Amino acid sequence: MQISNEQLKLVNDRIRALIASDSFYGKKLAEAGITEVHTPEDFLKLPFSEKNDLREAYPLGLMTAPEEEIVRIHSSSGTTGTPVIIPYTRKDVDDWATMFARCYEVAGITNRDRIQITPGYGLWTAGIGFQNGCEKLGAMAVPMGPGNTEKQLQMMQDLGSTVLCSTSSYALLLTEEIEKRGIKDKIKLRKGVIGSERWSDKMRQRISEGLGIELYDIYGLTEIYGPGIGINCEHNTGMHIWDDFLYLEIIDPKTGEPVPDGEFGEIVITTLVKEGAPLIRYRTHDLSRIIPGECPCGRSYPRIDVIQGRTDDMMKIKGVNVFPKQIEEVLAAFPEISSEYQIRISHLDGKDTMRIYVETNGHVNFDDLSHRIAEKVKSRIGFTPIVKVVEIGVLPRSMKKTARVIDERFA
Ligand code: ZN
Image (cartoon, rainbow, N blue to C red; front, side, top):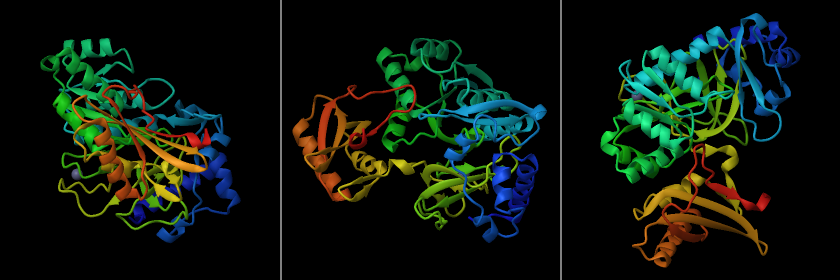
């Protein structure tokens, strides 16, 4: 999807602002002698930006607007070392809320809805993003934050929440708790807006049927506003991305070259109007693809597929590139197992091994099931894993994102 002339104009405005502010990226652009871009080809010559650069700019090196215009910062959770700080102007906060309100609207949510928000509030962008969008839309926010399932379910019943915002893992946990307590008829939920964690169709179906709700995938990351930069519509044919605020590319993560529409690669995002911390060609490490053609809903916003994982999730096992999504698709063909699974890769006696843990109830023969799954995986990826079958409920569920692939070779 080529960058348009209007988008190029906005990119040039951002390049000028970066250079004028002498911010971290302003200096880099000035050093590289870049002052503007005229054509889509010029644009592709702009250097990428990376999370590691953003860490180098800690604490406020990314600040591109004057201090008096910065109204807030957010920080992305650095699992290793220095976090990343993103400054926002009032306009950035407002633009983000506009994008988020648009997400809710596309999901058919209105100012008559009551939105229970379970992602965390604080330095990271999750809870507050859901909240600002909700208020912009004029709906009623029920700002719960994460955890305390007892209280979540109480408020959900007492207030008659109609929309649940959460991670897919927490939505699954709530589904199971609601069933366990037999309170489904007291729950008024009609829709779920789920953060862009990679999740299987099977899990989606489990939550959707368990709660009797429609589910929407929302996309975003702290470095680029936060959640709310795109969502799937009622046709569920990928997430529409708000290209009046952002330009999105898909590149080959190894070569950095753009891939044709329809092919999977790494998402790279350029912010078109962000003031506090504009980013040019930011590598997200999220894997997806542009969905070619028009959406049946008629909206012209481009679409990307559900996030397939992270570029660093790609596993090389016995010389073969394996992708968690491939295993997930194989598992989806077995109705007798739950939507939870775990993959563990280890190196034993000079050989890589893959163990896959799956859950089932006590009514099936564990050995037989394990063989059948192992065979199917072999036919898909070329080597035989060890499949361990456990009782339903044994694998970890979490409030946040559940780690499903554990590589013990590098532990
Ligand atoms: Zn659509």
